Length: 273
Image (cartoon, rainbow, N blue to C red):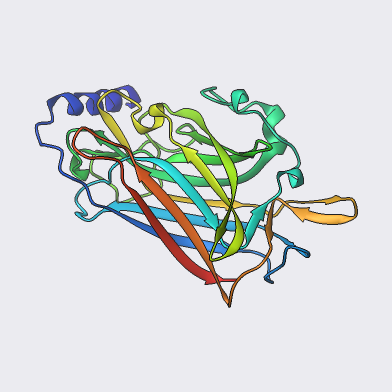
């Protein structure tokens, strides 16, 4: 069934005759919360866990969005300290490896799910697209996080065009990773750590002529702490917040196509400090 589904996607890429319309992606940060109370400060940071999520669609809801190539995600007053993780792992240990090696288990800092729609590059209609949901795991690399994505372990998806259930997997055999880096920045005038990364070709286009467009991503990063020189530090730390609301910001850069230049968009969400 998996091989047949892959063949169907590939065939659709060849025979699709609809022209590629100029896409108008829509963006929304719909999940943004921490699990520890208090604003914190630079002198007295508060370790915290957090949940982050965003959605990408198309203004024409019958279509999937244009493929996203670059991301930058962070929140006002949330800064990282990778020394607080229980371990770290190298990107080369899990990039395009069929499984994550056991030596990386202690480096796990978060989990989640990425929901995609895969279909022919020449036709953005959801009716000819298939769900491609991927298990997401986040590992500390020492400089950022390794985003591990797998199609194994999830149920097989339904027929093309059926997005009625999110409890499905992906017909495409995906087992790969993204090397994401933390970059110091400011959001809302307060220090923050942006997680920035570029999506590799094998995730944007798992097969020739196939686009893999993200629909939604939700992940949880657990509260992880370590005491260093008598001071408790967290993997994520609250170091301040203006007013009573915290701004979470996600910036997306679309992939350039033969008919459309790359475009950058930003979405934000206000949540309790």
